[in-house]
Amino acid sequence: MISALKAQLPQARFLGLGGLEMEAAGQQRVVRAEDVAHMGITEILRHIPTIYAKYRQLIRAIREQKPDIAVLIDFPDVNFRLAKELHRQGVPVVYFVSPQLWAWKKSRLRWVQERITKMMVIFPFEQPFYQARGVDAEFVGHPLAELPLPSSTRAEYAVQHGLDANRRWIALLPGSRRKELHANLPTMLQAAKLLSPENDGYEFLLPVASTLKPADVQEVLQQANYPAVHLVSDAREALHHAAVSVVASGTATVQAAVIGNPFVVVYKVSPLTFRLAKKLVSYPPEIPAPVDEHGNLPIAMANLIAGRRIVPELLQENFTAEKLAVLLQSWLSDPAKLADVREDLHALRRGLEAQKPGETAIDRVKMAVLQLLGANCV
Image 1 (cartoon, rainbow, N blue to C red):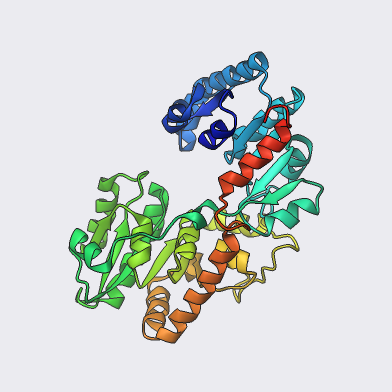
Image 2 (cartoon, one colour):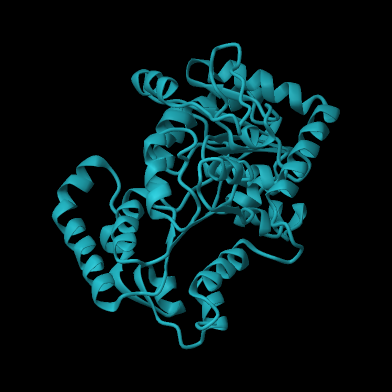
């Protein structure tokens, strides 16, 4: 975003909270992202004084330097607070990547209506959702849909990771957090055993997220007593080459969808968390989302975008090794069924792309910023 705006406004200055790449692009980092990036309740509680001090430092910089416009990206817990201060200062606010207020925390919709000048959304149904509620919103396309498919051939990938190119590969994506790893991977491995009891039927790819320690992954593999898993680093490449995949609910499901890999969505949380989620989550009329036979709303973004269940979901007590193995086997033994899922996913990808050929989500957000700045700044 910084690079795109600098190309149009070479004299522009950029300040705010950011990482090293934003600094390299030209941002004056008032607050370093790594100084406030803490995960886990105890970690956050321990660092609250520092986090709050950094937040006040950012507010002071806004008041002193009086920016002409603000671009906030995702990160709702901090950015909605920033938007309140920016609105108070008379600074137009462009918000890129909407928080999922349409699913829960709908009370925050009032904050969007009051504080956000322009909402730039990455899912098609979000534009009518916001527009029907008085918010100036624009669908800009999903950045993941803009990425080219991995260029490596199957043979090259097999050599790189010690795989048998004559076998079928199944990708396992248990999530990017340690808690998700321990909740989801053991059941995935049990299903792998059922599918390939002698380790000679299929080969399994396990992309290791950068947020996970390899030792944590090895611990789960050892406990499951199933070493026949190939650890890889690039999730997109694994999804591209796999015949099918098993993906924990989250951003990875969008990755699998835009790559066109048939996948099963799985997730497991504590019983209390699941009961609370079922009570709190509801979808607006813009998202046709019928419940399944267990009374569960769909959670996979692919199903929400399509308005129907194009990929199966195994949630909570329905996420068992036996059910997962049966589902995968039914797909792998039926090429026509797999082809139908791939066609649905290809259509979904087309729906996530920007409206004009060659235009990116960043291009659309950049134009919104330039229009709000006005002709004098351009």
